[in-house]
Length: 195
Image (cartoon, rainbow, N blue to C red; front, side, top):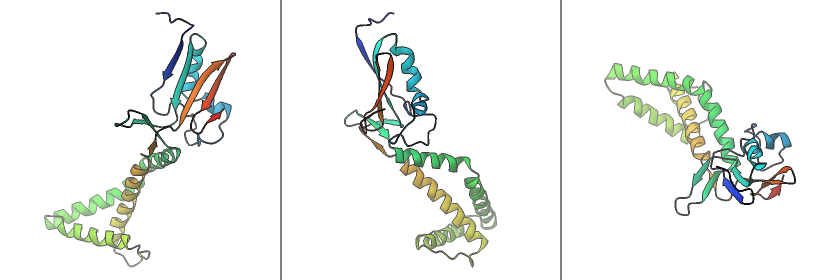
């Protein structure tokens, strides 16, 4: 099907990170180089279609969600993307496994010896209480307490990052692509800036 060239088409690319450059850790609210702008998914996609039909494209820098009450797009903030990168690095590192394996081993051993984990859970609660009281000196702690503490600290960080990486805003992270006089022009809508 051929599309009439005299009609302007508006495409909203509802795709997570469509306008994000290949250097995902770069703050997309700051200064972006031409190379960074061109190595997003949206740029080459738009470049291919803009010379064939008259089209304006909108793409987003973060994960996309929707406000159920308004139907408007919500876009993951730059701060949240930073937390997501930290979370991904933590998940890929061996820290979770290094903390989890000894913890699981202790819990299993306790269960085999006692037929339940009630005493282990009481010990765990005591360690959590000490952490919440901001205990800093663990030099006299037992090996079991250290294992529980390490596991708790890692899992607490995972939980914290999971919450932080979910921050989204409306009217955020939006890039518009327009073709004018033989060039692709990119306008960052939030905050507004012609790139």
